[in-house]
Image (cartoon, rainbow, N blue to C red):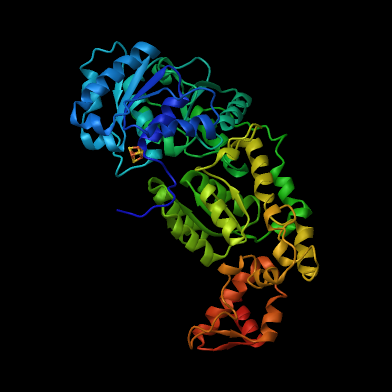
Length: 522
Ligand code: SF4
C-alpha cells in the first residue's frame, strides 16, 4: 500500500483509452466496474472532444459479482460490435476486473466477431498510463501491420501521438509541415488519426518518426525488426534538437537535410538584450522523460538558464534521465511521489520550475514561477490556438511560455530598488500575478522577509524559541539580508543558516552572512 494524494499517471487502461480515442474505426470493450466511466471526462472535458470515446464498459456492480460477470462481458462485446461496426476491436480489463480474472481476450476469441479482436494484458498494479498506451499501440501494430512495398516518394510514419497528449495535435501539424519542406510525405500518423486499415499499411513508409518514446517506442522497435524500418531517436523539441532531428532523418532517408528557419525567433529573442536578465536563472525541471530531456537542453543551451535539477515520474525513462542529470552535473529525481518532488524543489529553491500541473501547484504554494512543459495537464493546456512544442513554431511557443511567468527585467529591478514602495514591494511579486498582488501589510512584510515564500513556509527567523539550537538573526543581519533580491533571498537565508549550523553558531551577524556567501561562492 502507498498513500497517494496526487498521481502523475492514470492506470494503464487509461493509456489504452488514449490510443482508442485517438484512432477512428477501432472500439475498446473494457471490463470494468460501474463508475469507471469517469475516464470519459478526460477526453470530453479536458481535451474537449465533441464525442464520447469509443469505449464500451461492462460496468458490473456488486450484485453482479454473485452471478456470471463473464456473461456481462460477452453481451457487452456483442452489443458494441453490432452498434459501432468497427474495423477492429481491443478488449481488456480495468484494475478491479483484473482481480476477477474473466479473461476478456479468451472470451472475445470464442465469440466469432468478424473483425480482428486484439486482447490487451495490462498489469494495473505494476504499470501505468504511458505503459498502457505504448503496449496497446504495440499490440495493435503487431496484430495488423504487414510488410508491403515502400512508397515511390520518400515517406515516414509519425508514431506516438495519442488522445490526451500534451500538444500532440499541434506537434503533428508542425512536423508534417517540416517534413513537407524536406520533400518527405507522411504515410500514416498513428495512433492519432489512424484507423485499423491505416495500420495495415504502416510498412509502406521508408522510416518511422518516433515523436513520443513513452507511447510509441515498443511499436517502432517491432517495426524496425519485422518491417525493416529504422526510426528516429531525436525528439524535435527545441532549436538544436529540431536541427539534429532533420539531420538524423535526412541520414536515414539518404537525402539532403533542409530546414526552413525563416519563422524561427527563439535564438534572436533569447540573444536580444532584454533577455540578459534570464541568464543564469536557476530552473528545476520535472515531467515525463521526453519533455524533461528536451527542456533541459533548451534551458541551458538556448535560454541561458542554469539547470538546478531534473527529474521524471515515469520510470521507463529513468535511465536516460539519470544520464542526462550526470551531464548537467545535477542529481536526478526519479519519483512519482509529488511530496518528494516538492521537497526537492524546496531544498533547491530554484527561481523557476518547468513541470506539470502538479508542479504548478507546488510553485504556487512556494511562490515560485512555473511554466508547464509536460502532461499531466489541465484544460488550459489544450488551448484553442496553435501551440506546438515541436519544430520551429514550437521553439517560439516555448520561449514565450517560459518567459511569461518570470518577473520581467525592469520589474525585477524596480522590486529590488523600491522594496519599501506601496506597489512594488517584495510581497506583491510580479504585477501580472493577480493573486499575489497584495497591498503591503504587516503580513506582507513577514512574507518579504522569507523571500518569495508565503509566511508559513518561510524559515522561522524570529519564530517561537522551541529549543536551544534555534538560530537567531541579529537585527543588522536581517536588514542586510533584505538587500538581496527577494527571489534569491530564501536561498540566501537557508544557505546562511546551514553555514552557521555547521560552524556551531547560535547567532547570525552581518559577518556570518558574508562568510556564508563567500563559502558557497567557492
Ligand atoms: S477499477 Fe481502477 S480505475 Fe476503476 S475505479 Fe477502481 S481503481 Fe479506479
